[in-house]
Length: 306
Image (tube, rainbow, N blue to C red; front, side, top):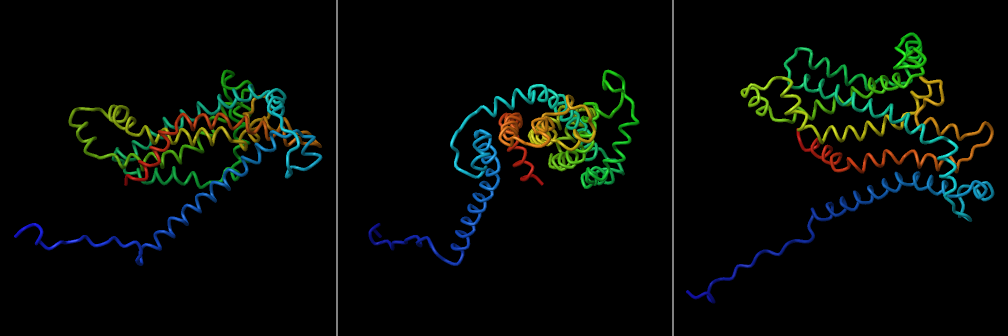
């Protein structure tokens, strides 16, 4: 039988319609519309703050904040940098944020390793305890915490006032305490996704508990640590509540509290405050850009492992 006489079999044509095609198309359109709307709503306040920052105060006072600009200037940024002593308060934020982030990640990684890889009867109870700490509103304990801070004494090299109150060390401690539970919860779930065979092989090779933690677990958790470092830096750096309530000296407060120095008693230059807020947001953007790849990797790996 020749090739010409063989029956020709044609592949069935791919259906472009059907009952399943329209819901899929509508689902994709709806998801894209939702993402676009969410992005616009998220960026709109930032764009409006930038719009106010580049307008002179006389322009907004005459025509209103929601109006077409008649003049555009960057003088507000220069005035905000000089009038608020921004560099000094930036350094205060660094002294609070960097130690707090490092301490939280070190303590949380160690606690999460013990809860997930060391057989202790109270593992579940401890994990619930750390997780439940995140459910406690900060405002609930502010009065007893304020009184406790006034009672605890510190050496002079940790606090010039001799108390936990009105000290940078006190802000570091309270930020560590409130961020530790969330990080323990995230890292413990992440460490559970690491195959147990790796620890069994390390144990057979004679690796100690510290070796299994430092040389095996920590390198594997690097994406999660980078993601948490980005989140912690943003949260602690932007903190305003603790700096106002637990610190009385204005020159010791972080940069978020320094924005209040630009506000007068009777008149507020919102253009100047908007420019200062845009300047204050730059460090968090820099941290995210530097850790962007690790941050996305930590989120994707954490969602795909179970």
